Length: 329
Image (tube, rainbow, N blue to C red; front, side):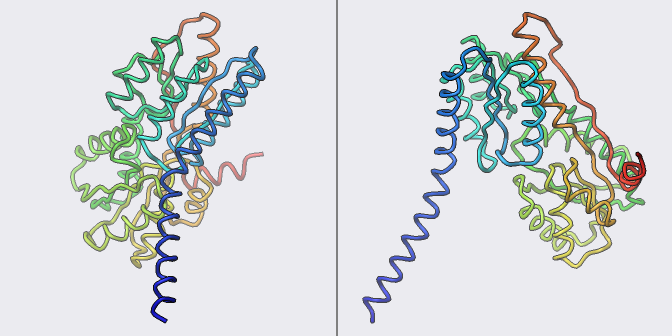
């Protein structure tokens, strides 16, 4: 009996070990597979320009829309897009992807900046090897990238502040969820938000937590924040999955008296606004970001010049905007 239990226990340990080993190596295997696909596609059609688009997270809805815009613009211009990214947000995997992409010698690279000296050096290495690089969503201003295409994240944070002041009915104690403490775009949004709220008497940012671009983590962080700071009356999320996670955290904490503000235009965010559990969202235009990035590369390939900064505007999504879209023909 003892030997049987020992065998079952050992088998269980091996299963757990195998699971964590798979989780560790699978992103790297995916990276290698995508890069091999890129190499093969280059061989099949050498007449097309091949551009690598490296996302922050492979299946994140925001990045899939960037991919959609880039690929639609690329088809019209005879450009092939090779889309890749970490399975889960992981700056070191983004760095590995950039390294491998440079080694594969594509015609250009579109990549999110992560404001890291090593990353900037890699971008410079690509430029030195004749591979143009454009940063999207978050800039890498210390590098030699050709241009940045994306939101003015500091201004987006200020715009969020205006929303809270306008619609939170002086619910002055604010909890904030950001997607990542390492992502420059998240820090800039927070910086812009702080700058606007600091000028408004009666408002206080009580605490800031990171969701790691995870709806589940946003929910857990919200529940923990409300337990630690029950006086919080307003919750703000600065990455696309945060608002939905905040709503789930409020339910878990049995709090229906908290105003919620989000970022981006996901179906779950729209539904939350329609149901009245999310007040409003600051909306980026990821599809336009992808399209403009490819348009700039096409201009570069043709020898045209262009500006370094290409800011894509944000919109506001609330119940009024939802109703106007439904009523419009």
